[in-house]
Image (cartoon, rainbow, N blue to C red):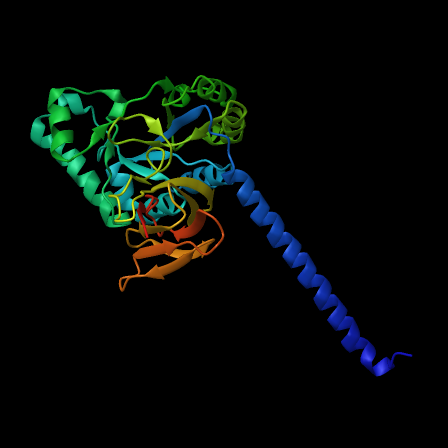
Length: 339
């Protein structure tokens, strides 16, 4: 028989255990949802989702929440004075995994300005965004898509790649949510769509755009500063280590990197080594990135903590690691040599 004095204690213990089970189930469900977003089929390639004219206090966070909840990343072409006035929103864009581009300081018709005025428009925007995020943009979208030789010269001076678009959503022209979704449905591998930060219809279109891309095997990618086209978020197929010089015993190896799961603050990569079972792979991250977890290998670190050396641990020739990006989504460099 249970002592009546002990009943409250037992009841509290049972309730505590039940609560722990519920919390664990909730956490597992959330993790599974994140994994589901990351496990996208990108077999048909990548497209560039772009949003101009931000950041805007009334809409930017709503836009970012819609993008992240649907597993999408986009390029935000910010107006410099908006960035200057709302630095916390620029950081929110960065922290949500978005790429940030230059869209001039006051959104003028740049082709009607002189060279010094154009340079000022671009430079002030570079400075505003760099002050907010620590990184200056590499992409520039001219207001209204208007460009000329004088503007291109200013872009070149600042190391900016000019980005126009392949598909115009017409959201600025009163397009409905359905029309915006229809426009995005025309995107093909490498192409870029023009949208804007400030329209509710544009935000409402995001879940349908995400579903349409998934149904066609397309993913939202980054815009390459070298080609101006949409590519995988790492900028290509990922860094690989080429064949090393033969060792006295002969042999070489190649390390191939593949993207794994990703979250708002971190991402996973896996490395597969071919050519030998006796390998040493060097992984170098760019601060403020940090490697916070590894599996299927034996890691060691240099004094800076930025260079990890991985060796086999008997789990095969594929290992993985988690990078806490701290605002830098660039993949670490990876190289391989035989041991």
